[in-house]
Amino acid sequence: MKLFHQIDRMQYMLHLIQQKKTGNPEKFAKRLSLRKRQLFSILEELRIIGLNIQYSKEKQSYYYADDNYMEISYGVKLLSDEETKDIEGGTLKILKCIFFAPNLANFAIVNTFQGKYRNLFAQSNFNL
Figure 1 (cartoon, rainbow, N blue to C red):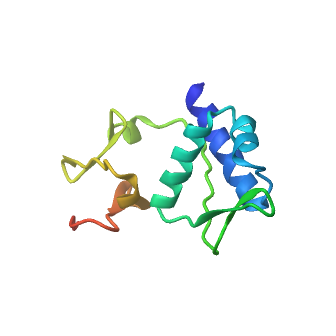
Figure 2 (figure 1 turned 90 degrees about the vertical axis):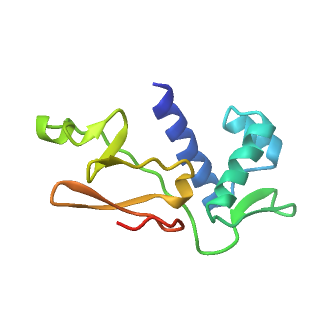
């Protein structure tokens, strides 16, 4: 599936940055099967969400310039009939409302509470 391929590629990208083994931008983009412009766009998005990713000309690698880093994981779970009632078209139903997060940096699902999803809007004006 294309989705899992993209997730795997992002995991690989973040791993190479953490290991400081990306190579120069051309090599890094080629390793990820991306165009250089696509690579720069992804790096910019990662910076927007708070990752301090820098490039060292000396080491010819991108690296995390502070202690912040990102890990991505996923799993597949067969949902029960009851669990499927709380999900509608890829969005979460909360208190009979559907919240959308056009900027994912402002939205985090932090835990489950009594089978319902509880959300924090870290940088928004929404209060639950």
